[in-house]
Length: 145
Image (cartoon, rainbow, N blue to C red):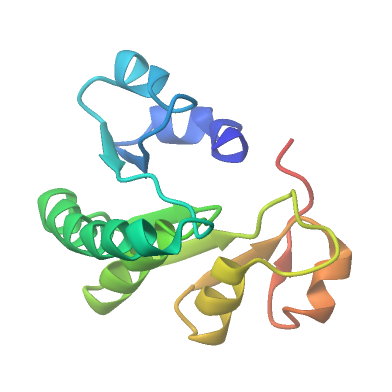
């Protein structure tokens, strides 16, 4: 989320919405953007049984939010909650811009591998040149920070 917050000028200057996981680190967004923030269920793969149900819920919620918002573009730095929204968006005509997280220097993320491997992103950006060996068709964009 902090990476996308670096693009604050872009989303504040446009008709945009934020869809993110509900957690203590994102609850402040509702105060900052009261009519433009939607939350998905927070889950971690470390607790696999509840995660399966939360992921299923997030797929349904992503479909609902997509229909409600119907964005022209979806810009994401990933996490597992981004996958359903990106797939729904791709199927229904949105342009997908995926930015591989700055946190991974030596190996691709699971979300990055899914989005890249399935050809979901219209533009796939990496923040480290070394990541181009995993994503050869990606664009090196440098650090957002």
